[in-house]
Structures are given as structure tokens and as C-alpha cells.
Image 1 (spheres, rainbow, N blue to C red):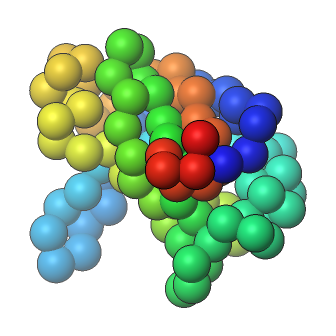
Image 2 (image 1 turned 45 degrees about the vertical axis):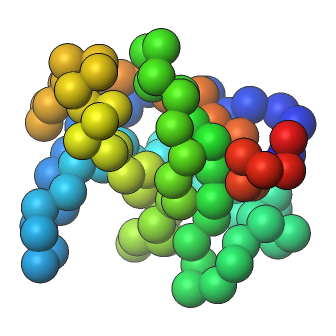
Length: 102
């Protein structure tokens, strides 16, 4: 897992696919840093494993590539624990890589 945490704030958005999901869009100015770190961590399809923290809740997930940037999926357990939903702004801290590589 990469050493330096990546921090940003973002509004929670909904993406409607086969099922609706909530995401935080990674700011464009962080995309190059994530792509570089992902060279040794991505496991295919452009997804990038991360350990993320929103509020006091830490969770593992994978960034999804979308329109030249990335989306951070927000699990329902995270939404409930932090009391957040569509349109809310959140502060995110994340490290690239899988939790088992700490």
C-alpha cells in the first residue's frame, strides 16, 4: 500500500446502473498521483484498491475509473455509520493498495 495518504473533500453523488450506488468523485488534480500509485496496485479493469476513511469509518473498496477520473464507492455501512447521503460533502482520506499489504 502506498505510504502517503491522499485527502480530498467531495459531494456524494448517485450513479444509476443496474442498482443505484453512491460515490465520491476524486478531484481531477489527484488523478495523475493515483494513476502512478496504481501502476503496482491495480488488479485489472482499471480499478484501484484503496483503504479509505470517511469521518471515523475506515473501509476497503476499489476506485472505479470514470470519464478520465475515479469514483470512490461509499458502502451502505459507511453511509449509515457517518449519517451521510446524496449531496452531502465528505472529507476522505485514502491509501492506494490492499489492507493486507500494510
